Every structure is written in C-alpha cells, then in structure tokens.
Image 1: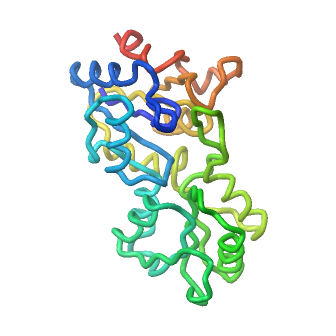
Image 2 (image 1 turned 30 degrees about the horizontal axis):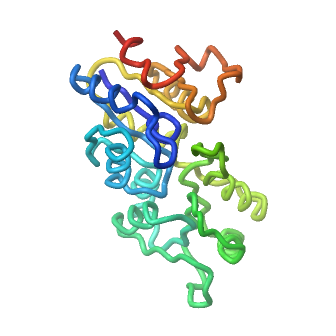
Length: 256
C-alpha cells in the first residue's frame, strides 16, 4: 500500500507540526506502508521538505520520498526550454537549474530581452516590477507556466495568498491561461503514478480541488483532513472524498 501525503495543512502548519502527525507516519512506516510526500509548495527543495517533516513531526523522511510541484515543473520543461524568467523561491530556482535551464529573476535592467518561458510559483519577495517584467515576457510570446494554482496556503494564523494568487494576477494582465504542473494536473498525476508501489494507493490532503481531484484522476483512495484549507463546517462533494478525518492522527485507525 502507498499513502500519498500532502504536507502544508496535513503534516504541519508553518513551523508547527499537526498533533499526532509524527506518530502516524512512524506507525504507518512500521506497518510497511510506502509513504510519499507530495506538495504543491514550490518554495522548498525535496531535501528541505524532508527536513521540515522531521523538524515538525519527528519522523525521519528522505528526499527520495518527496515530490514537489517545482520538481515536476523542471522535469516537464527540461530539454524543451533554454532560459526562463522565474517568479519563485529557492526550491523552484534550484529545480530548474538542476534540469539544465538558465534561470533569470528579479526586476533589474540587466535581464534578457526575451526568454522561452515565464515560470511562476509562490514568491514572498514579490514586487510590482517582477509582475511587470513577467507580463511583458508573456505578452511577447513566452510560455506561461505555473507550478500550481493554489490561491491560498494554510498557516497557524489562517490562510494566506498562495502561488495561485500570483498566477491569477499574471493571467489577468496577459490574457493568457497558464500551463499548470502541480496537483491536480496531469504532470503531477503522472509523476506520482511513477513513484507509487504495488497495491492500493491512498491520497491524504486538506484541499478537495487539488488533493482529492488528484486522487480521482489517479483512481486512488481519497482521505480529506480538516487541519488545513478545508474548514470543518465546509460541505464537500462525496463523489470526491471517500472519508473525512478530523486529523491525520486518525489515519492509522481508519486504515486498519
């Protein structure tokens, strides 16, 4: 059995672990479950995500268990583009450069006149100049690629703007629909499918529109938890959710 975990809102919120998440991961690993950690958050590398899981939950995860939307974006673009303009943090820039892509960032006058693609993820240092530069590139013919379209992401203080909010601003400014790589779109579905083990697959997430739709696209089981983006009083489509749990801490008992 493979269990695919989202991270933000499922295992941790910012620097705080969800209570019981570490015990759940340890129990499932001890039971021989194959664990994957699949996140639309493009700000972290796979190593950073594994470290965050360990730091917040105590569970020893490895980078080989992690799939990020930045990784999937780099895999999709590698060999097809030479240079990109990136709005995003270190996780995205590192993944693109590892794929052999020249990455340009910022809003200085030293940037090239043209790039092959504009690649957008969450960037907490975003400026109006960066949006303007990206808009000009896309309107001049560059591909418009989004790591994900999540409008928000969960924190201990509540929901805050996600990478999808930046993508939406550029879509409005350019009149161009982006190519989206992360959950629940096919590049991520294929990346997860290539990494699952034999037997049943369950996807555990806090968003219906990304995690549960990803599970439906892959033909996998759907477990929605209420510690992140989905509120306890929010109605959900039963066709997209097999079970709703208060927290990931309740998962081992449910699976047994």
